[in-house]
Length: 282
Image 1 (cartoon, rainbow, N blue to C red):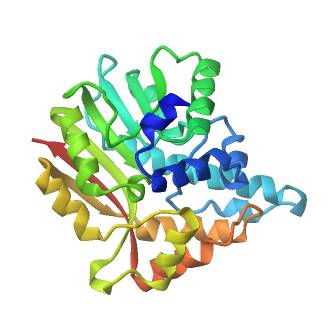
Image 2 (tube, rainbow, N blue to C red):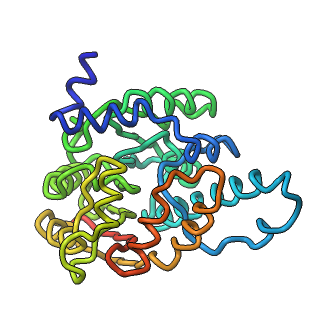
């Protein structure tokens, strides 16, 4: 379609859009079915040990519910860092997936949310969710490229990327976000990045790249490109220890995909880190 062609700027972006248009992974769908909030990111926090108790017949249900809880904790933690957002403000979810974090932010603040994705399937799904939730007047999802949305400069109080920065060049992404944020606006990302101190990306990091058709950035590039685009960090939190329990549980779960061991290997050997970075637009 014409709007899709405007959102896609390269053969690589087309391949990413094709991947997510086809994606029906139970690790995303089954977890979202728990309460109707569909995430496309991972979880943080300690696993409730009650998940290991009870009958074997309900094991799968308990694990799915606990993984979903940990993913919602992650989204809530990101939202905690968006600052003083009010009902009159406008915020943006860059690389919104099926809309989970957008809906949680709207529920928290009562504000308007624009979600952006290059996946037509994700945008359609998320807009239907907005209609079902009765918030379509406040939460809207757009088939747009987050590097060039066409939205008004300075229109946003806050913008975030929840595990979506690895699909774009950071210099272009942060330049785009800097244009859209009002002065004093807030940018937050939770992302996996490879540890520069380790050297080049490890074998496990390369496996993750291949699995998700992405290009994980070095840690240093986030701070360099933020500095180049008037984004000054106010918070840097290493969430690596907090996400390992989620991955250990997922590796035992009925929705494991096989990518769990590379994640755990990379987190444990220090070649990969899971960070929250918050920055103010100056």
